[in-house]
Image (tube, rainbow, N blue to C red; front, side):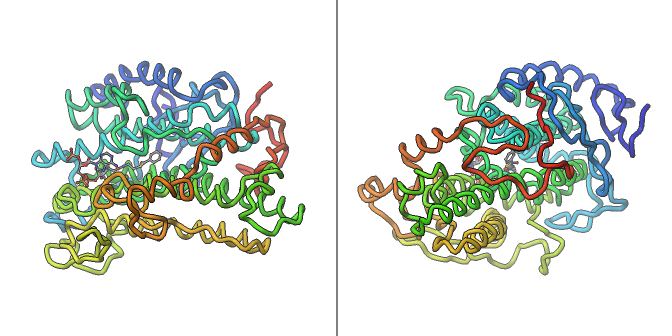
Length: 481
Ligand code: BYC
């Protein structure tokens, strides 16, 4: 066994779960592997599969040095099963079982609920790879292409992470679920992915950056909540996934930030002061800020739907059972049981949006969503700081939570970005003010020409401040030739 850190890196499936001694699960995973590769080849990045990509591979779970960078062909990426180290004597931190030892096996009474959470989490991972399938063909640089593929292979690894839990702890049902995770397809009318946002298209690179900024951040929040789980293998799995997830949000935040920077710079060079003079800005070959705002509105609102209903018995049950906690549960100063107490939630009452205190357990989806919105605003402030640096009078702003919703209380109304309720007719008339319209989409798609020369970037995006793994600006992140 070639042990790098605490990871068995020698076999087909690198792991730190002693797979070599767990023949049942090892065989189940080995049987699943060819189907996974078929899925990757059919639905993973289109083209470039034979190219060498400078990727990081997790080879350890040591927080100080877990990744190794090297050129790899994507189908040969070592998708492994890595759990964060066990915390000796870990106790369940919330719910009815608070203070009891964390479970190492699935508690029978919660089996169905736990399986559902793991399957939903697992389903999002391949879905995002499917959504991003065609982007390599229009990559604005080799640096960006490499980041896309990095995100893709890691989402693939996150699927492995959930499949491991299903196959190890859920027997025949788990194996069936693992198969189905390879069968569903993003956007397919007959076999769609489970959650709405994962059936949308990611047609261009602005969408990709918005997706990795907003939707991967839902991933962060949900993984943070599952990392508190009383089911210790899920907790440890999610804790390690979070280390990888950080890069995905970095790609999103810096991607949008670099587009903002390039737009402001082009405006400054051309002496265009009015950010709303869309026609003049577009003539410069950059993405105007109002269109960028509309894309943010779209991706933010689609992602809010992923937090479920305002009032949720599922969320209450999962917390009560000790399966899914809150964001940074251990830092919250309360009893961690929540049988008393309330949480303020925005609701629709008599066709008005009002704040209502609901039982804290029922409002857990909204508590996580509020934490999410606060986290989103941090990066938005950084984008605005770039705009300020160029003294352009424009501010990017997250829309109201009632805007453009398909799940929950606000699904039945239309609201503008400020949260004013609109009639159906008014919404139809003004929709294009808030969301990308056909001509916006066509303009952005028209900009998406590939730039595959090392050190070169498409004209609508600024280069990054630093390279990946501290590589110099002309580094060949993907060997295209
Ligand atoms: N679409 O009680 P409710 C990521 C269903 S992203 C369709 O409010 P709950 C990633 C719901 O299933 C993170 N259906 O639901 C990011 C329920 O149906 P059933 C993924 C929806 O359970 C980028 C019914 O409506 N992980 O990792 O409280 C790239 C009642 O709803 C939707 C997780 O989500 C929807 N949007 O909340 C790659 C964590 N919303 O069961 C990866 C696991 C609700 O009554 N999932 N419904 O038939 C959960 O914790 C929860 O299931 C949810 C929903 C937060 C999703």
